[in-house]
Amino acid sequence: MGLRERRERCGLTLLQLEALTGIAFTRLSTLECNASEARNMYLGTARRIADALHCNVLDLYPDEDAWRGGVSAGVTGLR
Image (cartoon, rainbow, N blue to C red):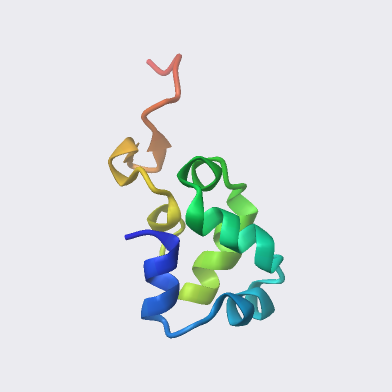
């Protein structure tokens, strides 16, 4: 479930989410519509959104299967 679905499930508009998080409407809209932007979202941004939507930070990233135990599968060099 993406950011838009989570926001709508909470019954919030983008303007309301902007007021709750302090993140600009245009940035929130970009995160909802562009998966590559959401993948590269700063953790602080994700935390503020997750707090407002009462969900886990990892729930906001579009590639749920890319995360295992809080470590991105894209991280290299782990042994």
